[in-house]
Amino acid sequence: MKKFLVIILIVFISFGGTQVLAQHNKPLTDSVIRLHVIANSDKIDDQALKLAVKDHIVSYMQEEFVHTSNIEDARIKAENNLANIKREAEAAIVAEGYNYPVEVSLGTFTFPTKSYGNLVFPSGDYYALKVIIGEGSGKNWWCVLFPPLCIVSSSDKGLSLENPREAKVTLKCLELLPKGVKLD
Image (cartoon, rainbow, N blue to C red):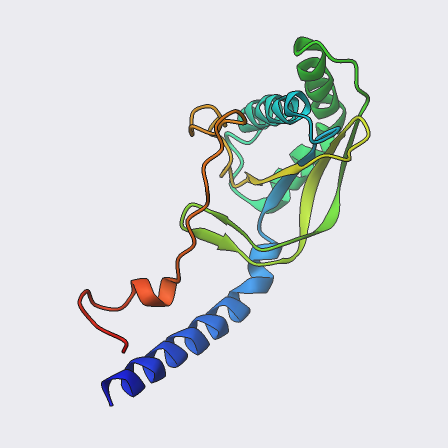
């Protein structure tokens, strides 16, 4: 009987969470600007370059967005700075010793579900700044440019291409159960 009640509780929590997410999905897609940087290739050097380009762009746009409080103004600032953003990306590429071309564009692009700390952004179409380095055939980097949720440097967060850590898979619904509850 106890197991049955726990299962019913999990189902209700899951269903309720899905409904809340569905209700908030549309406004979220319209209230952020995402950043999508695609590396030239999956080689370690190209992946490190991708992170350097991302850091340059985020640093530059952080200064542009410092007094921006709404998405409309943020979009206008991003559009007005597109040429400068491209120059920042090119400068980062040259500073790292490469000569790759770079494409920079603003538009609506499809993103998968992504979490940033405790925030989860559902899959969907988001307005984004897209940066393609060289051939653009490598792994990519996503973050939220406005409001600024990707302002921390990759190196500050302990991310490393040399020592990747294994992902830990957990079930959130089981984490919510009180300690000591057995599901046998």
